Each structure stands twice: as C-alpha cells, then as structure tokens.
Length: 295
Image 1 (spheres, rainbow, N blue to C red):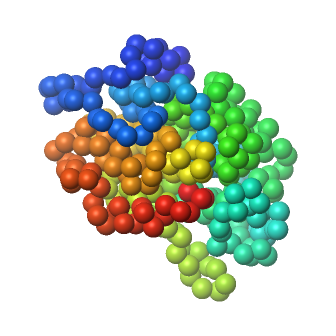
Image 2: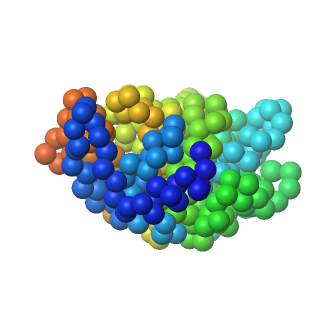
C-alpha cells in the first residue's frame, strides 16, 4: 500500500461513494473535522474529509513509539525499567498510575502505553531506548513516505507531534504488521501488579471496551487540547478490511458516535445506531474520560 495510491484516491474527490449490497449508500455524516475511511487491503479511500490537513495526533504517537521499540531485539521486552522522575509529564501535567520507583518490564510498559495510553510508560520506553528514539521515529516515518508526520516526544503530549489523516492511515497499516501492537491495542484491559496487588488498566477506546466492533485488529486513541479526540483503527466491517482515522473530534462521545456511523454505513444489517448513535452505557463511560488529558 503506497502513499501514491492514497494521494490519487484523495485527489479524485474529497468524498467518495461506496457501493454496498448492490446499491449506493448515503455517505456518513461525520462530525469529526478530519477523517479517512480506507479499504485496508487495496488502499482505496472510501471516504475522506480534510484528509491532507496536518494536525496534532496526541497519543496515537505511541503506535510509532511501539514500532521502534519492537524493531529492536526481542530480548528488550524482558528488560526491567524503573519509573524515574524524568518520566513525569511536566508539559501537560497528565496523571499516571505508575509511581516513581515502580519497576516494569518493557513488555508491560508497551501494554500500558497501548492499552491504557499511559504517558509515563511511553516516556520510560523512550528513555531506555539505546539511542535517539525521536530520530529513530522520524527516520521510520520517512521510510514509510510520511512527509507531513513529525515527532517531538514518545507520548504525543507535544503539540508538534503532527500528521494528516491519510498519512496516519498509512502509519496504522504499518503498525498492524506488528503482532504485539495488534494484540495489546485491542485488549479491553490488562491486569498488572501494582503495589503488590493485581490492578486493572482499561483500554481508552469505548469501542474496544464494549466490543462494539467485533473484528478489530488495531486501535489507538489520542487526546490533547490541541489535537482534540483522535482515533486510528483497523478491522473488518462486512466483507472489507477497513482502516478508520478520525482526528480533532470535539468529545469522546462524538468520536464514538462517528465510529458507529461508519460501522452502520458499511454494514447496516449488523450495526444498529440508537437515536444518539452511541449506547447510553458507552456515552456515560466516554464522558467520564472527558477531562483526562492523556488519552
């Protein structure tokens, strides 16, 4: 799948019509300001909205962080890392459940970064990387042909971590080639020892927590004030493998509704949208996450 294919599809039209079950269906009315829906197998853009605009990607940055870490030897996964004061977020002052001095394996830090979107975990991964991880992340982006994708930290808190929806779809397709990223990012939760007790860390994506998208291969959310609510997902809807990117959504609930609108658009017989597009249970949970800056 190449960026040239993305560019050709995007330049053909800002919005694309998609044939389903023998008839053309009305395009989804997404509230998110930027979006891409793409056939993950062919690269065909099925729907796009401001797809070439570069904006902050927030914690979706962690997909690239994970790829660079996993490009190293597998023995790194068993390395023990102590959380340091330098891992504390002094930019956005986001919260973390990982106390300074607590010890985790690199594998556990990857789980915490990809499932719970923990920023200290992402900072610790960057700190112990044997070299300049930001340079490695930028080099990898360049090798993918991502000319509008830039990294300034490993967590996504820096507003300069930017990309376009089209390039993020491309990055997502690369991230989906990593088995551990697929595994961790689509878990509804992970139980890890904290202060001597089993502790549950839940996925930041309500769609994953509620198993609303049955066949899901990758998921990562993001949030900062600059980025708004973002998500990159890949999975199967109907007979198609789909990559979905939403950026700059105004709330978690809006992001969740837009995901469900795309599901309903591609497989209306399976996904029934309630009046407000999102089940009350999901909306309530999403709202409780609204004020947290780390997603």
